[in-house]
Every structure is written in structure tokens, then in C-alpha cells.
Image 1 (spheres, protein in one colour):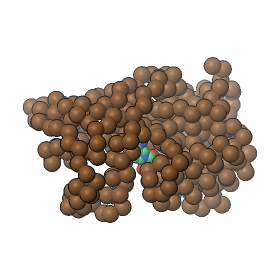
Image 2: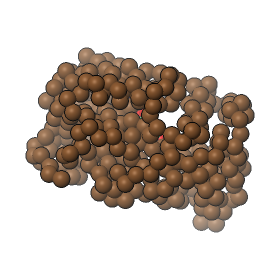
Image 3: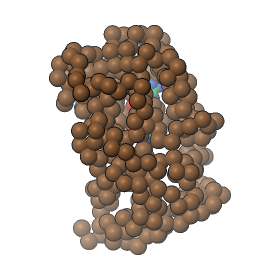
Image 4: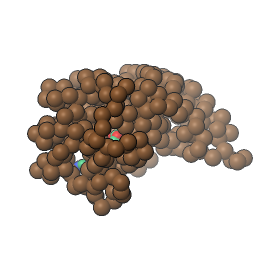
Length: 290
Ligand SMILES: NC(=O)c1ccc[n+]([C@@H]2O[C@H](COP(=O)([O-])OP(=O)(O)OC[C@H]3O[C@@H](n4cnc5c(N)ncnc54)[C@H](OP(=O)(O)O)[C@@H]3O)[C@@H](O)[C@H]2O)c1
């Protein structure tokens, strides 16, 4: 694909894990483009990326933040209740600022749902983007392999990996999502496309448990439990109710197959094959004999 010269490419939500990784991917392949990293903490941005202040909860800050950009990636926040309004505010500000092509980071399985369902705010963002942006691309990310590491660690403590039903998930490493996003932002021919950033395989609960057992040398099985049992267990572990609700909503999405999709999009867009879950888990979980 042909690449345009001298674009100003923005990343909004730039100082988080995914934002930093995407900015690094862009800088690495920038070839004459300017990279603008928009964050509530622009002082953390390092050259050659240019830092600008922007806060989704303060839409007035976004006009200046997005001014002069040719392309912009909107990265969502970890504030589920506020996210739909934040997406709409960011998209409106980008359209008003004249950004020519807006890329929206969404989630696998996004569909018409009501809050507090996991994908409700993403679906709202996707719909608003399609209705208002001059050119758009959506990148739906699968479940982070790095986030599964936390579930794996907790399951080792409990001696069982639980879910609401047997299901398959194509866990993707964050760095691979970033590489795919950078490929879209820098490349051409992506307008109107909905991509899925996924890992290389869709693993069942039993396969995930077996992988953890193999890496750590500790026996582990997958067990389907009810929502009530899951809620009681998480509450007993001392988690606040909002975190419990998010964990349940994630497991409900897994159970209906929202993350059960494998594509070649990471390799095509990012230029390298996606990391298997095994590699991310092995790096994070130490075997007792290691
Ligand atoms: N696929 C998955 O499995 C999965 C798992 C967890 C989360 N996610 C989603 O993916 C997103 C990115 O993941 P991550 O690992 O990079 O999360 P992270 O490290 O927690 O970063 C969160 C990002 O949200 C931005 N942000 C928060 N409040 C903001 C506001 N009011 N205005 C503008 N930006 C705001 C932050 O930007 P600044 O600090 O730079 O302003 C930061 O870049 C998350 O926020 C969440 O929506 C996906």
C-alpha cells in the first residue's frame, strides 16, 4: 500500500499502556510523519513525539489538542460509566477540528447493548463515528493477554480457573494491538474498514487452564460456575462492587463468544505475526522449578 508523506498523526489517550506502545510503533515507522501524543499528562511524552493536553471529560480541551491533525486514534478509558459520552465528545471534537480520518479503538464483539454491558459504550462510539466522521476505521481489540495474566495468577491461588460457561477467546498482546493501530494510521486503503486485532488462536477455558498448569507445573482445571457463585467469590476476595460487575460482564461476554474470533489483521496491519498467549503467560508466570 502507498503511504502519504508528512501527515500529522495524533494518538489520544497516549500515556497509558496501549497509547505508549502505539506512539512508539508510530515513531519507529514514522518516515517523515509528525506524531502528536495527546494526554492529560503531556509532560510525560518524550521527543520526537509532540505532547499536547487533552481530556475527554473536558471537550473544550480537545479542539486545540486535535487541531491540524490529518489522522487521529481515539483510545478508550477505563471509566465504563463515562465512556460512551467520552467517545462521542472525542469524535465530535475531532470532526469539528477537521481531522480527515479518525481511527476508533473498539472491542471484539461490540454490538447494540445497554449499559452496563461491556460493549455498550464501544458500540455507541462506533455508531457515532460511522455517522459523523469524514473517513473512519474501527479496530476491535480482543481480550488483552496481559489482562489474562492477572486472572491466571488469581486462579492459581484458588486452584481453579472459572468462567460462566466453556468459551473460546483469542487473547491478543497489547503490543500487537498497537502495531496494528500504527499500521492503520500510517497506511492507506483502510477507510470504512472494521478490523479485529486478535491473537493467533482461540483458546477454550480448558486449554487456558492446561497452559497455565504446564507453565507453572501446578495442576489447574477450568470450571463453569453460575453468576451468583462468581459474584460471591469475587466479593469474598474483597473486590469492590464496580470491579465485580466488570469481571462478571467480561465473563458474560466470553460466554456468548464475543471474543471468539481469529483474524490475520495484526500480521497484515502490524507487519508481524501476533504473539501466542503461551509466550505472554510464560514471561509472566514463573514455574516453581525455574
Ligand atoms: N481488550 C482488553 O482486554 C482491555 C482490557 C482492559 C482495558 N481495555 C481498554 O483499552 C484501553 C487502553 O488500555 P491500556 O492498557 O492502555 O489502559 P491504561 O494503561 O489504563 O490507559 C488508559 C488510557 O485512558 C486514558 N484516559 C483516561 N481518562 C481519560 C480522560 N478523561 N481523557 C483522556 N484520556 C483518558 C489515559 O490517557 P492519559 O493518561 O494519557 O490522559 C490512558 O492512556 C483501556 O482504557 C480500556 O478501555 C481493554
